[in-house]
Amino acid sequence: MGIYVTHEMNRLKALYRSWAIPCEGQHVYDPRHRAEWLDKIREAGVRRRAEFFYQQLDALQTLRQQARRDLLAESRKHAATKLLCQIPSIGPIRAAQLVALIQTPHRFRTKRQIWTYSGLGLKTHDSGQYRYVEGQLRRSRKAQQLRGLNENHNHDLKNIFKGAATRASSCPGPFHDFYEALRAKGMKPTMARLTVARKIAAITLILWKKGVSFDAKHLKQQAA
Image (cartoon, one colour):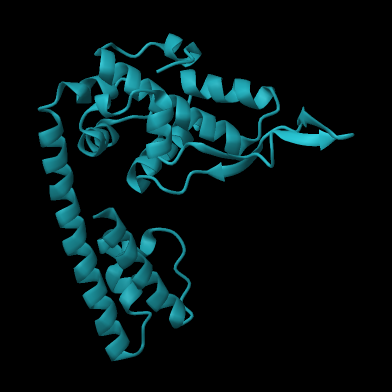
């Protein structure tokens, strides 16, 4: 539902920009200022089209709020929701989405399986473990090369974990400290946020499988 709302918002801004009307920020969507924005459009037909776009946006936002309420109401029926909400940056909406998308944590035996399913698994390339040196077969010392994240995955789950990692990395808390420790070791920001996302996914699996509460000590655990 959020995708459709964003699409409608983009259509509105595109219409204003096509008539060279600057519309930065969120002010253009505010119902209190719509008459002011519509007056900037001189062509009656174009102004009428903008009015339709506003009506569609209002309808979608109403549906989105209703869907949000229904999602939260349904998620409260599951004990896992309360556990997952204890993870910093995993609020009621993200917890409800995780429960809906994963359904049961037992489908993943290890954290690496949930990483792969969520698009957080690292792809590596090995040009060959052995090579000939002076006529003899020897093991290559060349390290495996990283080729990015796995492409075949659940995009919704990836967005949840990446969004949670971005928020957790920028707000005070155990994940922020974890992120800063990675940066202090020389890790690039993008890789550090990915590591936080993978850690959040692993902790999600731990809490849900074992039915335990969140503890910052989980950040030091190596296995899910």
